[in-house]
Length: 263
Image 1 (cartoon, rainbow, N blue to C red):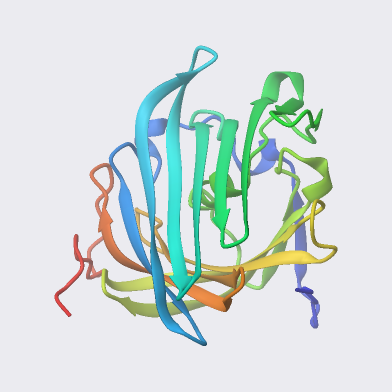
Image 2 (cartoon, rainbow, N blue to C red):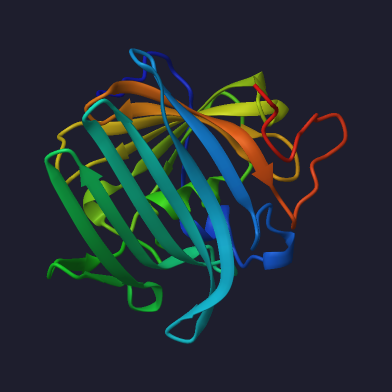
């Protein structure tokens, strides 16, 4: 995909210290025990699977207390079935990733990867022998970046460039504030902010990987909807079906259900 900006907007480029400093885990919009369930639809095929995002912990990486955030996805049509399992060990005080694992299964291939990230050393190392330096002192991976976006407030009609990915080949990550929108989902009705996130893929694609993300404008800052290209199946959308948020209470005026309604 190619991401083109067709209009003049305010461009803001932030370093990690400017956007987010030390965090108090108890004040974050997410915490241990959170479990979000999504339905996945492909525009050409209808419902093709489901996904679960969860937060557990605390757990420790090299002596540092972290949250373990995960995203498990299963989808497919007929014989074209696939799954993804992503894990990120997130230091919630510095909002930086210390370890990232992903396991992909496709009809004709599979891939496993694990990366250890050392923010203080500005260095990362992967299990396949690859390594490199980080651009800043608070690097993130693809999954932890979604949780990071839940902690920041962006200005309407603006574009932001974040040098936060641990792999320099994949920076900057560009985020555009698109618009505000009311979304009705099986999990409830939410006032949301639509963001367009463009991530460079320096490993496989020459162009950017573009994801549209709708985040609720309440205290929980939930990812209500995500839209992107689904491998082998074309464009697809993930919609929140249920949300368990024991460390966060949505603000009044947002009608939210804790589980999916009967169909």
